[in-house]
Image (cartoon, rainbow, N blue to C red):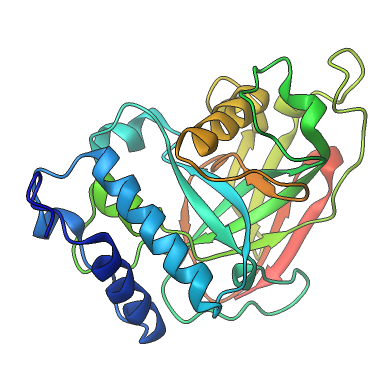
Length: 265
C-alpha cells in the first residue's frame, strides 16, 4: 500500500482490474478502499490500469481518448468541477450497420469524434486546435461503468471512465484548419432514435461551450495526464444529449450534414 494516502499499489490495482475485466466481473470501487482518494490519485491508478491493458494485448492498442462528465449536472453529481478523460482501445471498436455485441449493460451516447492529422506535443488553444484535425466523424459510445457499487468521480476515473466500446461513422474531410471556411459543427442537429421513438434531439454545440472548446480541453488534459497524442488518434468530446440505457432494438443517430449511424443491440 502507498502510505501517504493508503492507496492500493498501482501495479496490484491494475492487475486485479485487468483480471476482473477478463472474468467479466465488476471493477472495484477505489472509494471503498480509500475514501480520501483524490482525482490525482485516481488518474495515477487509471494510468497503471491503461498500461496493464496495453501490455496484456487482449484489447488491442490505444487508439484515442474521450471526455466524460461534460455536463455540469453530471459533474455536480460526481463531486467534480470539470470533465474527466478515458482511454480508448482498438478492441472496443464496433461496426455500424450490424448487430453490436455486448457482454455487459451499456449506456448509449451520441458524440463527435476528431481524427488527428499529426502527433501533438504542445498545448492547443481553441483557435489552434483545428490545424491538428484531419477529419470529423459521428460516433456512438457504449459506456459501461461496471463497478461493484454506485461510483463517484474517483471510482469512474480509476476504472478508465466507463470506457467500453464505440461505433465510428464515416469521417468527413473539410478545411477544419480554417476557422473562416470550416463547417459550423456547433449548429449540427443531433437526433437519436430507437425504432420510431425519438430519444433526444440536441445541437452539437451544447457541450462545454462548443465542440472546438471541448476538443482543446480534451487534448490539453490528455497531455497533462502524460498520455501521448499520435496521428490517427480519435478524440471523442463527450455526450451530446442524454445518456440512454442500451436495450435490444434498432437505433439510428442522425448528425445533420455529418451523416448518420445505424446499429442494432
